[in-house]
Image (cartoon, rainbow, N blue to C red; front, side, top):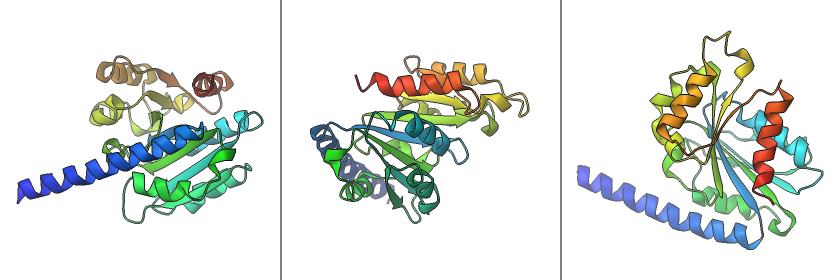
Length: 217
């Protein structure tokens, strides 16, 4: 019985990865830079995407796929910023998959987009195994989740391209050390860049925007 379950899981992931590759080819064809933004509920994913949109929307054409069990609430925040937004409701699923992205892409005029942000479901475990067709995987962790959160969820940090320790302005209030969290991330993945951010710190937000723009040159 265990072997049957393992084989089924492998088949599901294989099918997902094949479709993710198809999504990626479509995005590359249209010259769209795509970011998969992952993190727990309350980590600040939506806010950091909003900051990026506000900084970049005058120079780049932006779209967002907002994924959640009920996605419309976050989707409405992006819509208010004047960018094309698709709400990808996952129902009971705790992550987005390549099929949901394929369906969402069908609702976007891809020839008119330069940057696509995919906001994944709030979770540090489920999104790890599911490629979507993205160019870059970003994991965001907030100091309010506790400074031991990184070491409790090693795989998402090992498989991401950028890590962000967010809400560092409240670190003292929640007794968390952002430098320790950054060190834990680099212990798990020595090659990953790590940003320390706060929406109240313009310089840290600029570094986040600079990272995005570095992939658009």
